[in-house]
Length: 151
Image (tube, rainbow, N blue to C red; front, side, top):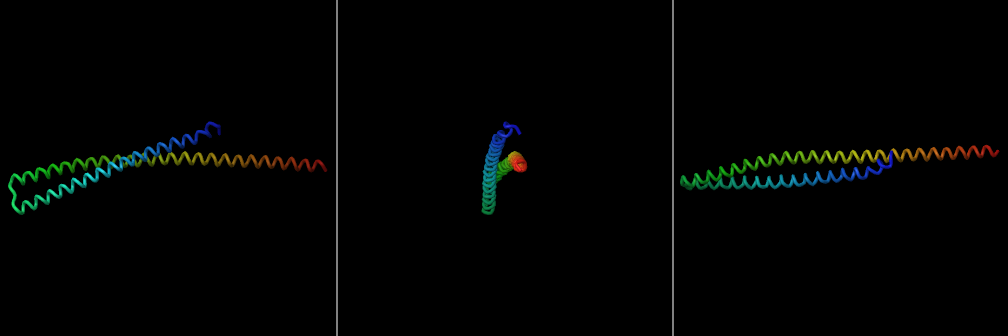
């Protein structure tokens, strides 16, 4: 293997590691956005449930038509906000899934580069061991010939 290819592994692995880290940070950001959107959805749902309870309590005590209409209109506005927030959650869920897929792909690529580097280093070590063994065998053979020729 050429010297250039041997020295490119650390750079290649560093770039792949940086890309993996960047994908992880993007995923972390998406997960945070998803959590916040979920909290907003919960708040909207709780607010709507609270107003529905207030409407029911007011209806049992007696409520004017105008107040009833205002309650229903406000609850309808909350229902629309909940519907919009649900769409946001669906979009964020899709982004999070794509973010996970991207992170997994970058992590797989990094592991592949590391495995290739490790395999190359292992093969280089085996070759060095073979070369050393060959040199030792040659040295032993030469020494053995010298000893035999001196008799």
